[in-house]
Image (cartoon, rainbow, N blue to C red; front, side, top):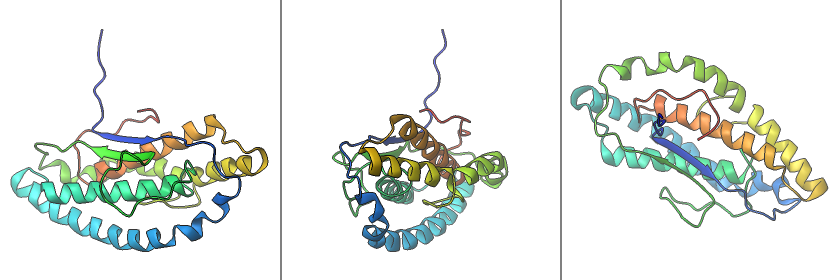
Length: 204
């Protein structure tokens, strides 16, 4: 018997029912404060990843404070995406926080690496190109929640189903969650947060 290693990036999302039939139509408006903050957090994420690059190069370690902050940025973005058009999985408004919140139905955790490869930091972007292509179809772009890809299309299908039937199709939710999981694993890998190559799969 063999046991499969657990990937250090864990994304979770719990479909909360019942969901409003119509609220998804205005979530883009309700989430505007989050979008503004995430724009600044995204810039900070990139800058701090560059700082982490040099720290890994010289010490082999990702500064813990920067790591926790960047994981928090990913978490914030995922919670907003889960509420809005990356999943439409809950009507509960996302908290304005980088920290985990056990009361919110969406979260992401990244295991802190004790040591990272100094050489891999130069080629992770190259190794991840196949994933970038796949994630481009999923999100319509890399990074924080984008729109125009398969995730948004299937979320729209779910929204229409909600409007007409009052129910969110479970099969669509599983597919959307898997695509988001894939995308955020790649984001963490390209963001130098782990050395383990992302798996080509939707499942945990």
